[in-house]
Image 1 (cartoon, helix red, strand yellow):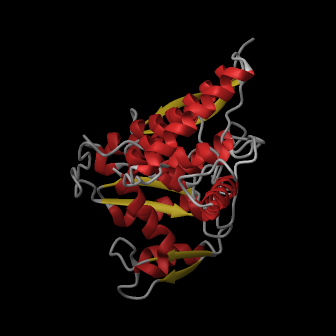
Image 2 (cartoon, one colour):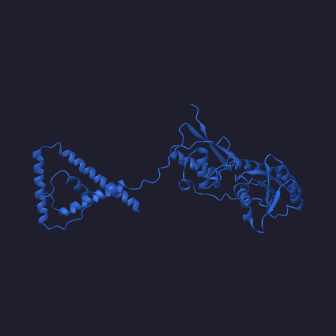
Image 3 (cartoon, one colour):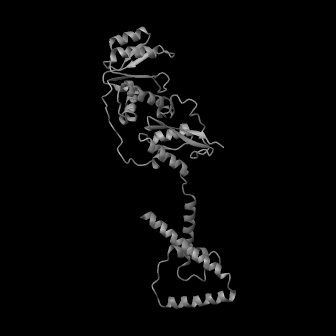
Length: 346
């Protein structure tokens, strides 16, 4: 209500000033004798008005501003009747204070263009699991647009429905995830799914460790799928086994965080039909995790971005390139999307 009242007050002041300016311009079309006669006529009426001792009314902001502007055009000391000269000078000082306060106001951040607002709304609507930080990272890494998460939050749609589905949370008997901790890349080196963990786990580690990249350590928790035979097999491959303390998931925080991310961004929104379906879902999601998903711990960054998302940052932080368009690719049937810039054909 206060904002509406301020706007209406400003409109009233501007309309009053416009009327006074129009009257002043119309005076130029009249003769000097007519103007002098009208001035004397108005002065006589004002003198009669003052003799009646009528209670004076408080001057409005529009009247004060008009008197201040008109006083700049002639010697007003003899013509001033309703107020004291000090009062008019005070109005003049307040007018200058208001003017310089308005000119010195903080400008704030530049306004986000409508095209970028629509893109933020689209990304948030198409990807219900994304927050403002994820969208800001997508815009920065793939489109070269610098937008703060707070600005992104301003243009995100509200959550109109609860889309969280904890479906078949216990349908997976066991899964294996191998993360590369050496380079701090957050890249998933290997994954697989099975209903028979113990012997299968040994074979999975053999497939990973005998690859191109050598591994010196294996950090694991105390789950029952990691048997003594597994430790012996790893030692025979020249790998040192490090076990985390009891009830200390923070000791293997990268892997624990990955498990939570898989559930929150993938499995809670899908219904696996069988083991093959689960493997296909995880294969597509892992490719998105390694090659298309920004990670805040990397600056933000992408573990394996490739050449598809190599882009230079725009000179203007909120402007999209005019010769490019934003192209999206759906992941997992539209649960996530990957965006990139594509040149517009001439």
